[in-house]
Length: 318
Length: 290
Image (cartoon, one colour):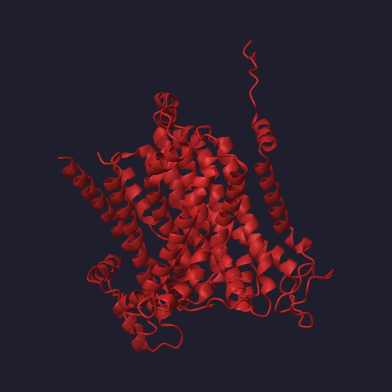
């Protein structure tokens, strides 16, 4: 009985995601309409032949009315066809498939760093709120949140790669080629990306821990004679661990976007470099494809978080 | 007799403001720094010792000196002057994006929250959809479509930020619209527009002020990112992001070039964040300090 209501809640949540994705596809397609002048002529670039312009007109079905164009584009997208690059002629899906793992590696590594550093720091901070260590950690955290992470990336490159020559300054190696090589290339970008994340995880964990530690239920545990460390580790952390799920998913979405600029600093051929190059050259199918895939990933992560939340937290499952 | 009033000592707006500044050093300091930045930016042409675009090939990468307080860049341009003028561009861009977010987000949130029903459902789905766009990526896509330029990029950033404000205002409106004073205004025949403007908006404004301050920091970082990528401000004009982009190109020969713009962005973003947190403490009495 309980299982089926849980399933229903999950199905309802899935159903909510559908209109969001549909509206997103409409927005992504509408980007094309922002192109000034005759879209086909502008996209074809300077000195384009008439045949080329006609070809672009055909790709986008520009002779049809707007909704017709949208639905024919959507029809292709649903079948997994994101069209071809106007510049190289390569299929957009293939370019994305090649770039995505590089981006994902940095983001996942950055999240791991944020959690591994942020959780202990948050616990330390919350164990004596208002104390010296707490104050210092909060101040460093404010810096971590405000620092532009591509600037931090430049500082890291300048120190660790150019001065000390410890790590490669630019480029990426696929995990499938060499695990150590891939990690060596990914570690500096991931650290630069994780700075704000560490602070975010620390702050969130600290504030939810402080709240729990001040609650009636913890006071009862104290009265029962339980040691402070048992209260912290066994009872309080268990209570706030689901909050970490939310923080992690928000972090993923934020870092997924921020990596665009980090990739430029390290010349990593990921989703960010792909979309920046395409935007500079008005390679519109690539721009639309990357934006659409990124939106899908964000929606997917949000969906997964909500579902995991319902699975893990008995208080949410109705 | 009608003009007789019983004066209840009630802190005026100015009094509350003064008390906030006295009590919260963080708020006072960040407000002071922000005012300094705004003054420098507004008076940039008067204050900056040199023109931001004036090149001097006899003084390339000049070190810090009495003539050039922060040295010169790869074209012999005065770094301090570029920093001050760049600040104008960076702050303009941040305020532009946030102004657009307010103009779009606040009315939409008010309408969704006040009207409710299917309109609210539809608007909420659109808000959800916009919120799943990574801001900087959409800004890149929009500059790709409209053409490269700071204003285009920041309009896009503003559009992506708008749903955050809309969601905030909607949630507040949902609470306020059922208050007794709104009901009584309705009974007296007030129009929807009047109720929204006179009774609902003032009650949603406090969380908006707090969030807007935090958005300014996010917009500043977005401007820096776009200009760094070459999609924002175009040379020879300077913004802090474009200065970092040049510093990046010259990183191996003149690594010190990345410090002035980087520190400027860091301090300004920190200021906006601190101001926002300080305002949240003072404007939102439901939040406990911990």
